[in-house]
Image (cartoon, rainbow, N blue to C red; front, side, top):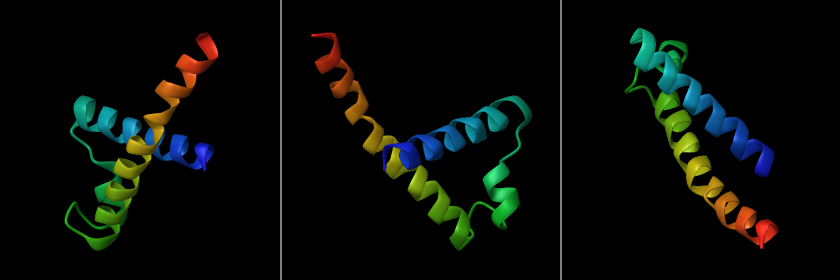
Length: 65
């Protein structure tokens, strides 16, 4: 689960980087636009993965202490 979440977060980060640098939304172009059902699923999964990855901040603190 951790690896899947990290992969989705990386995909989201790369997509945001493409949007920032080139005004190109890769997810939207692959799945038929920002409002398409598949694009919204991908955006939602990336958001859930980001929320899930917040746990890594707290896990890291346990290792440091």
